[in-house]
Length: 134
Length: 134
DNA sequence: TTCCTTGCAAATCGTTTGCATAATG
DNA sequence: CATTATGCAAACGATTTGCAAGGAA
Image (cartoon, rainbow over all chains, first blue to last red; front, side, top):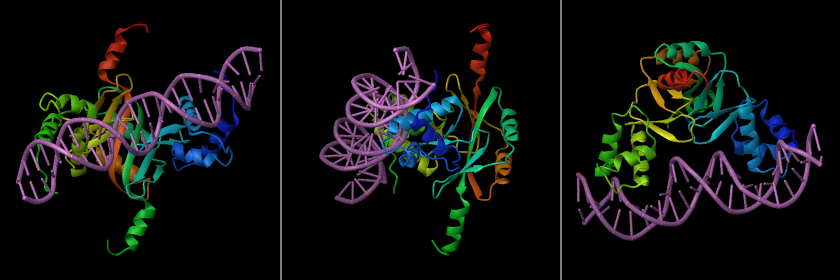
């Protein structure tokens, strides 16, 4: 499959490659519109999925029923704010240790791994503290 | 909301309460049909979601685009077989330790947690070993 | 009787796909 | 030129919802 780097694929990659906010296909679509005014959602999906299959990016399923895309393909954890829905990277954790912990209690071979932590993100914690009541 | 325990809700609960195979709504629907021949998928969904909101069960999103339901509401990890799609509980892991590990690298308060490990389940590992060649 | 629930069917909504056309190497 | 990619719109499939009728307290 000789990959032809189309303008839209390039635009999608440029848009997502440095993102840390785990955009959805819809978000990528909107974000790329300025560079490619008449790109279609289908093309965005096709390219994102292709990038995932190629290992350029990774898909993240947070539990909101929508697929999020993450250019960070190294093992890391995710935090999801139960208030605003934001998805934040938790870098620097010892992923290997977590894998070991789980592997110790399971008889199969564990290859991949993906963990989600839920709670209030720093921002939401702050604004919650502001309002004294409610 | 005074909950009226209908026959179908009872049947759904009876069906799922001891399951460890994380059935989908569809699976519950089929499994409950013997007890309630003309129950509808909608009712199954409504009840499962209600049970989740009530904390009776928990939903599990494995990455196959379908919601799985789990009567085990205690913190535990899940293993998903990349070959057969089976979802297996990993009991006995030190979930608290994993939470701590992640919390140490994040500035928000971590409340919930859910992790998925991927690989070949014992069964599939076995059958893979059987076939000398592929 | 009074709400809560159901069954049914239609409606959503995210994602996928077929196809004729356009762009890439 | 031979392919690969695109845009569009229709197809899909899981989940949700409105509503009139049925069932539990």
